Image (cartoon, rainbow, N blue to C red):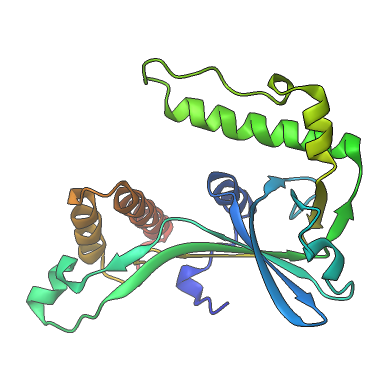
Length: 233
């Protein structure tokens, strides 16, 4: 992807953290008929290093696990907070008017060979882990909600039913060979404009806009720290 220097995010732990926070990925594969895209949650494991491994599962009826060309890499695309940024949020608009709209976003691209895992024990362990991850996140988010149900477990369903469901899916694994991150969060704007973006987005009612404000604020803090590390001119 197009990735100017000031938007590049090379830190692997930061990229893994975003993939965990926003695990619903677009998986792009190359088939004899051209490109194909599927949408599914993926789990990132840091091992083996340095880039880690992605794991997931698809329906057995989904051709993705049979049609990917073996010589081609698969590409998993993760996306964090994103949204339209109005020039009206920039103090510089009142100063000189030389501002235009933009779209802020965070994205991670992870590429590597697609491996197929058609093994009932592996699949049971994986879907159990996947369920535990997302049930824990759900209940952490609803920690103060009254009357919330207990986390669902794979063992809550009848064993024969689970066995039937496992036969209907296939595991996939992508050892990451290339990992690229981009955080476009107004780093190319003056500090006052970034502050205006944070303040403006924070006033909006949409929680997604608040998440975007937090991302811009984090980028602003990092830029301030880097500037503080520089020796005096």
